Image (cartoon, rainbow, N blue to C red; front, side, top):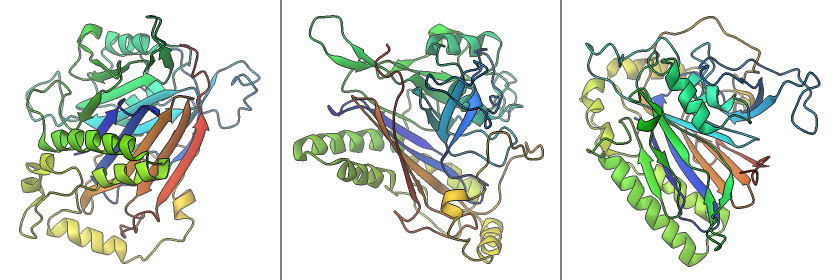
Length: 376
């Protein structure tokens, strides 16, 4: 039951995004790294963009053969052949974050519980698209060929990180709006747009964005994010202080844990807690013990744990993953300031063998400047 919270309320930052990835802890997942792909010029594509690991980008971001190369920063899901992701950003400012939608109606063919396409591939479809493509064109293209209907339930927040200045003569700064694409959208006019104005705070978990029954974890997260931003403004937090406070939101654990509770029984209460501790039944615990018995991986796991280059492809793997305990596996904070500087921090809470990682010891931080930030 992942959760993403975002805000445009901090005066020093165009956008702040915080995210918990809740997943089976042993699900094979790389650490965040830069990878390259040849940009797709077909907005309805949902497959992973073609790799460009051998392309030498020149000063204008194009390879010698004039094919546009997207430089993508993300972790990647190693369980499925698409090597998708749940959150990523590119040097050219494409941004996307995904949450699953838990479909429950097994008789609704238009909204399948399990799709033939990877949800994570939806994220890389936008991250790997041409920097010349607008968000509106991407959204329209995805909907035009029914590309969202062959995926399990999902919501995708996507956008192009660009500074906009209002034309009212006041010089007010805003961010180019973000779209929320989902398998519930049939036409482009059904797609919500957010982050259009300053002072916005939004949250999304494993339900639709416009669901009137807002989950408790989302309500709590939005409230705490608002409070942290107000405190940060009053006390003039440094970036590190702000980041620590944002991680404290992602660590809010209000889930009652009992060894007698089955995994299916937990599903009903996961909507209560922002952070999900390790949960599971006896089979899940035994699988976890078997994994942790392998010991602590070598120190280089943080930098290269199963990291894949774009051209590598595993054997076809589309089956679901349900081994070991379930819980918050990764936490990510994305800060974008008004000069287009990005600070991307991912915190790993578990190593590849299911051993807990002390908070802060599994952090990886990347800083870069968005190319084309002022090109709105």
